Length: 388
Ligand code: PMP
Image (tube, rainbow, N blue to C red; front, side, top):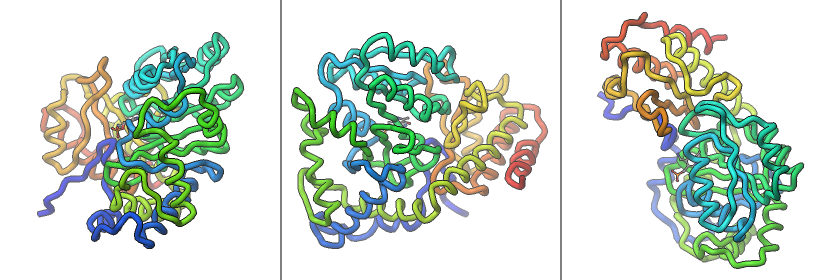
């Protein structure tokens, strides 16, 4: 018997054997020439994966929340106006972080859970008062809602705001073209579509963001997050020289280089298309099983994550049965609907076989709760979408 379940939560995800081998190799010195080369190459590859050839990458030990903290700490000064395009749990978190650094935060909220804030309301908020920085959660992991980053970034820029995108649940899975779309800062964490175990905060800052940082009137109010400390280190490794501010997580950076190499080899367009296709197949299966989804329309649904409501009469006990069938999915997170839905992550090295295994396990779980449905209906719909 295989002693492992398929991990289909929105991070951490399943990692490739090559990435896991890098995690288990003998740790080198952080100034060893072979590590310096790997770190430098990972920084270059990060620009390729973020589609931001002119960006400044930062790779720092921490989780996605540190990546958010880095953006806020380095760009916000007390009294700055900030606008949060709010799609749920992680948008609220960004607001709390911005406020910690003294920003005056306004929100534009979605009209309902599962929807996105209307562009006209975002524009009105940008016109209402000066906004130095606007944050957008690309894929809100609590709702599986994806925002239109391209349109939002264009609006933000048109009104002089720095556009910061929380891409923790999107970068390297959901289509995001940082430079072309005019995103000033994009950030993520290693454990999602980037495909590396948890522990790295990843940020790419464009030239306007770096200018805003350099033009600060006040010191950054966070010692560890201060780019003043990290920029020379990133520049050193990019130039294939060692640097030291805090000891880098050596094995994670080896693993990052391996995973970024795999991502670049697949190609960004092919990778976005694979995520879209697998997501569409899973969503078709969920729908065929009679489950509604949290995103209110297909055009606001993410390609990295699916959030189905339980059918009537079925509750969270279903997830235990799904696990019995070998697949781990996640419970609800958004406080307003927490116990009415669950979440399935499908990003990174995910394959068609994972989608079919997941739907099979969901069907098993539904059957074990006593729910009446046609077994095989979800699998058939997914298979049809995969073969299309
Ligand atoms: N933003 C989004 C959209 C996320 O999904 C998450 C994590 N689920 C975070 C931020 C925070 O990341 P971390 O848990 O790695 O701190």
